[in-house]
Amino acid sequence: MKSRRHPILLALLSAIAITANAADKELNLYSARHYQTDEALYRNFEKQTGIKINRIEAKEDELLERIRNEGAASPADIFITVDAARLAKADELGLFAPVKSRLLESRIPAHLRSSDWFAFSTRARVIVYNKATLKAADVANYEDLALPRLKGQICMRSGSHPYNISLLASLIHHRGASNAEAWARGVATNFARGPKGGDTDQIRAVAAGECGVTIANTYYLARMMRSDKAEDRKAMEQVGLVWPDQQRQGAHINISGGGMLKTAPHKEAAVKFLEYLASDQAQIHFADGNNEWPVVPGVKADNPALSAMGKFKADLLPVSTLAKNAAEAQRIFDRVGWR
Ligand code: FE
Picture 1 (cartoon, helix red, strand yellow):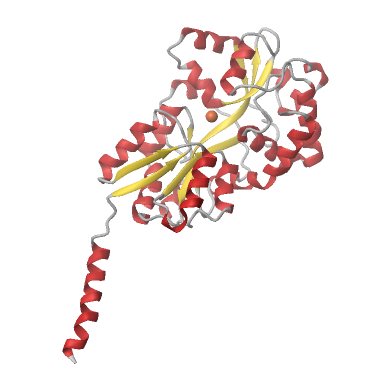
Picture 2 (cartoon, helix red, strand yellow):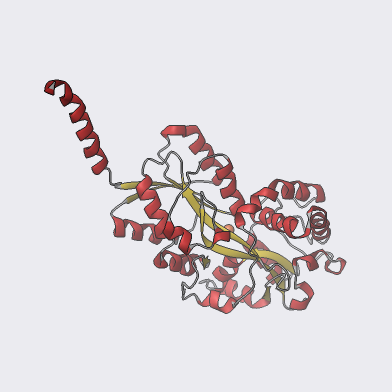
């Protein structure tokens, strides 16, 4: 009898031993967030936990494709990216595992997370105008950019970029699809030139007077304010920032965030990492290093550019709902020629 029991007992004991030894020593991070300053953020986690981060950086779509191709054998533990609609897309593909963490739930406001992924920093999409040719009151709201009086004065990034898709998705939610389409058409009619370049290019074009107004993410403005290059700081003196829609829903907010993958081989390390990103230290890093706002209320960052921007009313629309209108937003941009 005894001898028959032994193998089972041994197997049981070794299983327990494996579990006990399984404290994760590494973490595989797939990141579509490309900010040099994030390096320090990761090194700090390694120092605190002794968990080594293996980071693969690539474009969003490449990483998603890779995770899907790797399937159950994927080494990826965490996927992080920018833009809420992109995170929601990864979620729709069924890539994320739900994470139950009291810490994350208590620190991250509900409109900045879903059950499967979390925002760790926010940025606002604001109106930027040339102070020599326009006044802040001329461009107080997103709607103003569609008015005929701004004909030939608008520079914009492509309508296929997620930042603009999520902005339009929010306007579809707040104003309805047909109003949102009329707005996009009005803006496209006012273009000074066809959409090209990134947010920084639009800000530079406004500063140079090539156009009167654009829409850009706040961290690009802050980055130029804090730039080593005199020409960037000079450009920032030519432009003004407007927090749009302050009497209505507030300025459109987008996020950077991430989640744990369903197939993550290092789940314990993955949750630790997500919780680390919500720590005061990491939150301050997002603000100081990349000029984004912490998601955790009360975290005080010491970033002169963010302080200079002042306070504003942010749209509290749950960012996880932006994806719902993303496809519609893209169709509208295509229809109105905001390419
Ligand atoms: Fe960006």
